[in-house]
Length: 220
Image 1 (cartoon, rainbow, N blue to C red):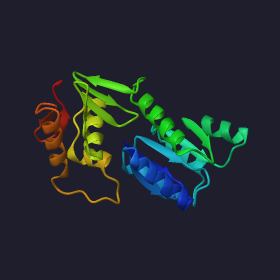
Image 2: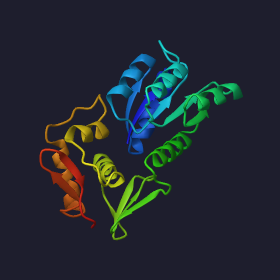
Image 3: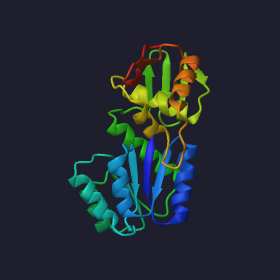
Image 4: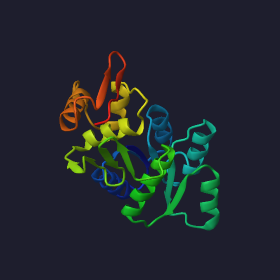
């Protein structure tokens, strides 16, 4: 999962980014509303954490602009504006959830998971694919009931394919989900992740679509 964080407080932004990374998420962080608008137009994010007090453009204006353009990415407002009129205005402007500062990181993560599950059409935290079981909350997988040791990016790739079983992802699209803009991507990185997943699960778990990319393969 790739998350866009728009937060003008450097320490809060760093804390969020570090905490979400430890829970298997890839994050891009901006303090500017204008940069945030450009980021969401350039990358397919799974969710956005939006502060309302941003540089250049107020967070409410950013949200209104996104929704006016038809962008349906789930948005969690995270702000110090805790008055009821502010909460109602944020939700009525198109936010999917509203959380006031100070906050607990675990609650932010739980709300993000819930937003992303709903946006992808899943009501349960666990997805089964044959003998493979994925827990979307704990970012863990089991095969025949036995835990599979996965790196963060192996998990992200596996989760991406299992939650979109009919879709073919190009290498560029997979890179967008597995790496933030601050991280370098080796030329063969995706092929390496695919190889490791095939080795840890089975050789047919991921199908190569020549000239197109990768797709979920056969049930283990």
